[in-house]
Length: 598
Image 1 (cartoon, helix red, strand yellow):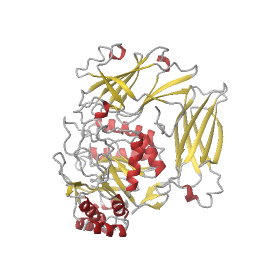
Image 2 (tube, rainbow, N blue to C red):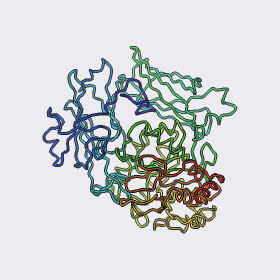
Image 3 (cartoon, rainbow, N blue to C red):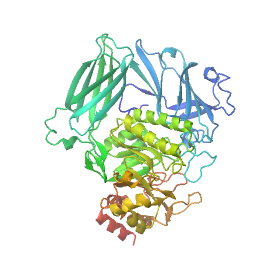
Image 4 (cartoon, rainbow, N blue to C red):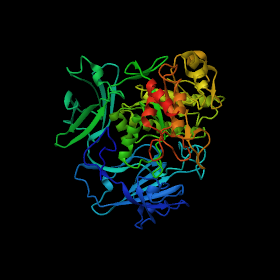
């Protein structure tokens, strides 16, 4: 059954079909499947798995660590598409290298575990039973592979978790016209009412093909435009005509407090009457930074972010359901945050949809590798380009985080190649998407970028006062400080004097103790102590400090990291109204927190 939100919400067509559910499954520890043509074999695989949950997770039905090579097969009795219609199969994520066959015909190879893989199965589809086969390779010891928080050891250790191998996001089918919209890029800037659209098309473009675009807001039409197609790319600028919002354009600016979205309907027609109809949306907003502040819609905007691992105990990096994705956004907002840093994974498109709709800004990470080499750098770069291509239309995403804590570039302080790699990826992300800020290396060892992002897990409020309470103290911390045992900055004073500073990881307070809890964070005994500790830490990092924002570690308990504001089951560890007051810097709420803690 299809969910309420399209799996690709910014290029949505009606009539898509989910292939999530029961698939055949087999391990291939000796790597014999290709030679034995498992992709073309009529023999059933030995086990059954529930897609899209990774085999390591309980919800998959496999619930164990598996070999580096695994196989999937699904039989489908779906009828052939009509004449002139193409059948596409989309895999939202397969970790890490994948190959796809339909009825024994090889359709695609893909490397990268975080982005969509799509194949055109039209010519291979038959009227009889159809076989879709996927081979996935996820080498547990390969630390040149972007893996994020997935452990390379057999058992989770320190801050790393079990692998999420193979298919770990939804699989779905859509039937589309031969000539169709393939991608859209919406671009808005600081001038209200103007939006640039770049549309790309697949299939033959004949004389007579046209596209119509209608923009609306809450049922009120704002713009209509129609154009003839002359090639596979169309670039146009649309102007909104709206007498209601023109005197007060801020009514339609997107922000977490006012998440207004412009709905778009696009229709391609051709001489034979067939058409392609898609739904999309975008938000009017601009993102930037001056020497002190992060800027949203040309105004200083103080960032209150929560670190989100996006990990569930029974499904791992896959979300249990679409409802859980929406609930995650609601929980973040209930706790007083206005944004989220998605840590070491690429967010589900439906999670970003709810950030767009309900109002959260997003700092977007990607999975890191752990060894510097030309291979790891090329893998990271290739995946980043696919991430930007997939997610660039989400107004909620305001920042790309290229590297985290020098992961993948461990000798950045002494190796000019690694410094060059960080700056190269920073500049590449700016080049392909200049509408957002880019953090080059989040945590320490700042070598450049739009924001200096600092990780500091001190639990001494006096240290926070000394380091962050005033702008000159923040500048001194960036100039001479060490956090995590590393220099905060590797560049000259002139190079770092004109960027805002965000405390992009701090906190990490365990509530009580358990045998498996990692001991690298602070600890309190009960909910009242947790609230009191939060109040002490947040006192010196609010809007009147020298910072442009903060990111608290972390939203939920995750495996052995028991430092969440929520449990793994997404239950509050303390009164959320008190936590929200502390996060928002509400003085009355802070006093109430102190009273509650005795």
